[in-house]
Amino acid sequence: KWGQVKSPDRAVEKALRSYRQDVSRLLDVCRQQIVFQSTDDMLACLRAIADDDEVVVVRVKNKMHLDHKSATSAGYRDLSLNLRILSEEANLLGLAGHVCEVQLQLESFARLRNSEGHKRYVRYRNFRAE
Image (cartoon, rainbow, N blue to C red; front, side, top):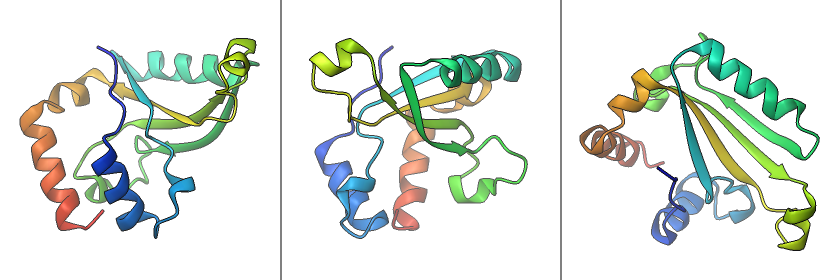
């Protein structure tokens, strides 16, 4: 299943709540999720992305790290990469400067991310005004 583009309403809400109206900090408008059976598989994918000459990793948010305070994400954990594609095709399409997000996630967390789980997360996020 392909990820959806962040809705305009949520993009505006996030820019206002989290980034003091600085839309240049909004890096997850275009996003995709890859689900893994194990952390070893996730790490192999991370290495492949990092080793790809046509990819520039702009930012990494590691919510899988033991030091991550899971209370700040309602227990949700993943590894989010913001990246830029520098391929010839990206240049031809005018996308070389575009930043997108790739979420690497374990299957056990992906199963929890059903509609009810996401609704609970939205309520939690709204309570925190994020």
